[in-house]
Image 1 (cartoon, chains in turn yellow, blue):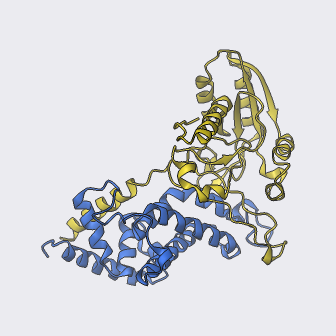
Image 2: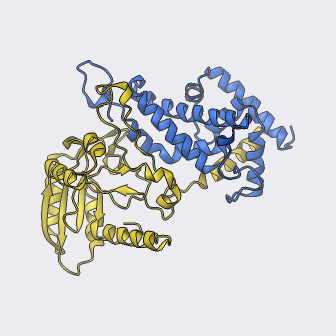
Length: 228
Length: 175
């Protein structure tokens, strides 16, 4: 009898779990800095990393902030499977190929339970591969410092975020310009398959999605579901 | 966000527990776990968010990276208990955002037969319900269930056995 109950319980719990759509759950919000505890204990407020299962529309620089606004309007933030995420780092190039650092949450960067940063050899290999692709016009490497400079420009009016972020929080990336009319998808797939690559973002797709979301906001409609 | 766990000279990477990474990696699973306990998605999301904030605030207590996930699950479980306790006392803000998944009014698509099981699970005492969910959803071994719930492993075994028997009775299965 117990076996039958066990089987029914397993099925029921599995089905209940299945009702939670990974792409639609409300993203976590970074805890607010608690000044009452004193500055030294909490030097930096949390930088919340995007869950790998969550479809992140605008991630660049590898650091994703979920704004408290996402909390007030979970529907608006996640209804289309996208995450209200502020873009960090620069928007240089058509395709951004992000490299693993030690704290990358992406499965491609995990080695068992610990993170694994891209090795210099892997970084070189990714660069070589990108430069030999026919659809690539130019490739630039963006180091942490450059990413941080871009980040500072982008968030010059947001002291909380600037205080929370250091050069070490940035991730290195390759910025790829494509030849006009080239299909980005084969390149994205090839780059994703390289060891040491955390994620690849099609920046033009992100820009389009952002425009559509803005448009929808103005007209009061729901933004179309877009996964970049 | 990363936490230095001890002041020794051991390799840094092995000594860090990154609360945000744990939550990012297990977010969906934690929300699902909370859903089974509290019954509706939005409350489950709230519970996980609060557990994240609490765990993050108390991250200095996270000394053993191997135990971090257990600690986090424990925090989620505690959050669920707190929500259910508030609901039991009809505190207004603790009402579910939507009908719980085990109720007939739920708009979540679950088969009738499965819903019966969830409703029967609901009627069990808290400890039995928690132990059954941790075993039959997460497939945790006795010791981990014990750690998450803060009870002994032998208690886990007897609780699961009693819980299954009671669930069977609730469901009208032949003994």
